[in-house]
Amino acid sequence: MSNIILRTKDLNKSYPMNGITVYALAGVDIRIERGEFVSIVGPSGCGKSTLLSIAGGLMTPSSGQVFIDGKDISQLSEQESALIRQKHIGFVFQSYNLLVDLTAAENVEFPMVLAGVPEAERQTRALELLERVGLADKTDYLPDELSGGQKQRVAIARALANRPEMILADEPTGNLDSATAGEIMRLLTEFNHEDQVTLVMVTHAPEDAARAHRTISMRDGQIENL
Ligand SMILES: Nc1ncnc2c1ncn2[C@@H]1O[C@H](COP(=O)(O)OP(=O)(O)OP(=O)(O)O)[C@@H](O)[C@H]1O
Ligand SMILES: [Mg+2]
Image 1 (cartoon, rainbow, N blue to C red):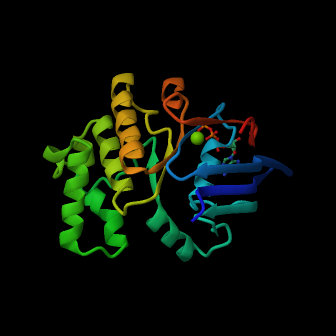
Image 2: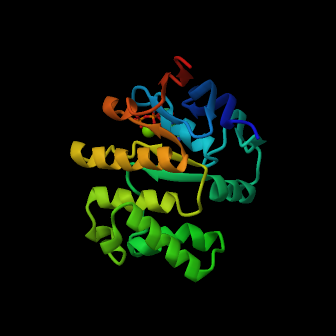
């Protein structure tokens, strides 16, 4: 098994804009090793979210390839791509993206429902994860009844539900005050250290980026260093 869990090769993403072509990504090559914690930084609009979305199979590139565990996912059908995501990747977003009508426990169970995990096992796993993120007493709360930091904890538990090898996080602390952001970072770092979950995190916060093993810096749709 290769030690590279995620690799992109000459990734391009362009949009037609008023008759000209705008490049959100222009020839992006990255390699992420299993177990690494990598931060992605760069000015607003430089292509960070686009890169993360394409790397996670949420968006298709205009050209280029994405390999997850050595498998090229860039040309898969929507159904095949969904299966890869389900099995290998957990996503965490700045705005939490919780389902508002579901409780914390039900939100964590949701990816397991999609993966066909039996109910009893789902419930046990959801409880275990919510305990792990410090929300054992909030399992029956709705997202609206939780603070921002608590919502992000639920989102992290949900991202880990199907035991992914990798978490892709897009500004996970972007909406949080610095103390709460610190707690979320401690949690993500803990899952990376203790459970060897690979973590790729876009951030604007230098103190969060500094916790990573390595930082990828982007500008105008390109990687500045590697
Ligand atoms: N649907 C779209 N149509 C046209 N251009 C787009 C579209 N989506 C993104 N872009 C452009 O692609 C570029 C990269 O966007 P992206 O969201 O990846 O930036 P970002 O680095 O994540 O920025 P931020 O730090 O503000 O989140 C931007 O210039 C944006 O305007
Ligand atoms: Mg972004």
